[in-house]
Structures are given as C-alpha cells and as structure tokens.
Image 1 (spheres, rainbow, N blue to C red):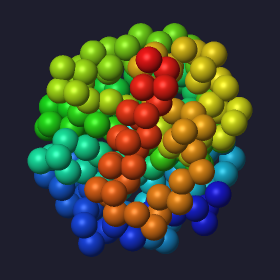
Image 2 (cartoon, one colour):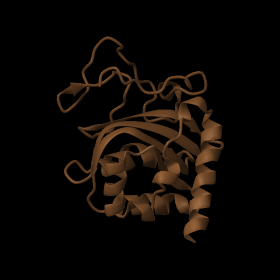
Image 3 (cartoon, helix red, strand yellow):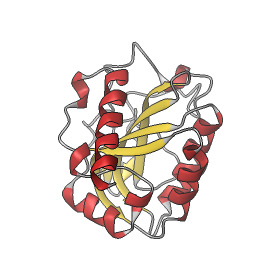
Length: 193
C-alpha cells in the first residue's frame, strides 16, 4: 500500500497545503518517512489524516467559486467502530462547506471496505448543502463497498453505484469530472423519478 500515492497530476491547479481555506493549509510532508498506517501496512506520506485510524484522504482539488471539491480516499471506511463519518464531517466537510463547497466528489477505488452504522451524519451533511443545490457523489466504489452503503441506506443522501463507476477520471480535468458526475447524477435521478 505504500506505493499508492494520491493523484498528483492536478497539482499545477491545486495543492491543499497551499490553500489558506483548506484544513491542510501549511502542512509539510516528509517524502522519506513512512509513519501513517492502515492496520499493519504503511501508506504513502502524502495522504492526509482526519481522525480515522483506517481511512485517509487527499483533497485533490477545491474550487470555491464553482463550489466543488474532489477528494480521494484510501483504506477502510469504518462508521461502525471508528465513526469515521463523524471525523470526516467535523474535521473536513464542515470547514469546506463554511468556505462555500457544496458539491463533493469522493474517489473510492482505494476504499477496501465499508462498515456502516447509522446515517445521521450523512443526513446532516445532506441538509447542510441541499439549499445550495449541493450534492455528494462517490465514484468508482468496489462492489462490496457499494452493497454495504446500500444496506446502510446512504443512497438517500449520497449518489453512488454503477452509474458512477468505471470512470477513468485521471484523464479528465477537475471541471470535466464535475460535469460528468453532475450529468450522471441527474440522469439517475430522472430514471428513478
């Protein structure tokens, strides 16, 4: 797992440690010391922690004028034992919402497992952004992760599933990713509606 770096090809557009509105502003990374772990496995030092013992992230892009952020995840998302959503909501999402972010794209292809609990924090997050026509989308989820998310009823508050999977987002710009996700999300709403 230590070779899996956060996506870096958008760094000419955005670096969270250089963004004064980011919770990671001013962070200095040691490229040679591997200290963060998911269980017994070291991960690349560029990943950021937010309070979870098993899930890390990287804010790949934030555009406050357009109101969206792209966040890559790695590890095990565990709401059941670790209440990861509480940490994610309080330590990252609330700060981004306060700065004008209302559309969230999470890249979950490196999320190995999801263990759900209740949906209270997801519901709160949904209500925080809905008045601004905001939404939350998770792309490229593994099948078992998606199934657990459905069992936890997160589909009431978050867009995820087959219509948001299989995307080679690394070849896109942040803006084209936003447009793609928004279009897929809108089509799914119409199909269900």
